[in-house]
Amino acid sequence: MGIVKISDELHEEIRKASQMMSRSINAQAEFWIKMGLLAEMNPNLTYNELIRKLLLSDAESVRELIHEQN
Image 1 (cartoon, rainbow, N blue to C red):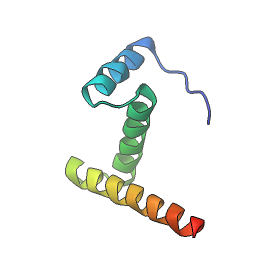
Image 2 (tube, rainbow, N blue to C red; image 1 turned 120 degrees about the vertical axis):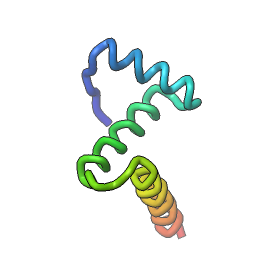
Image 3 (cartoon, one colour; image 1 turned 60 degrees about the vertical axis):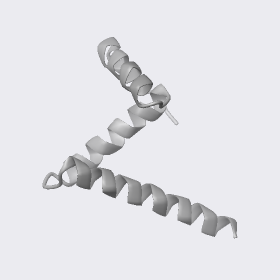
Image 4 (cartoon, rainbow, N blue to C red; image 1 turned 90 degrees about the horizontal axis):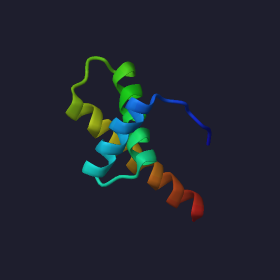
């Protein structure tokens, strides 16, 4: 884990979005970072396709954790 410096304005936007989405500020920032990374890596995909990739990626991570514990 590290510290990322962002502007006060961006922090305020993250705070507002986190309240609307019922996420913590950190979880909202992480979501936006992941979406930005996916968008840069897959510029041809729509927002809905990016969300699907993110959800599948998260589901795969959970499966890997369960497998490691067994």
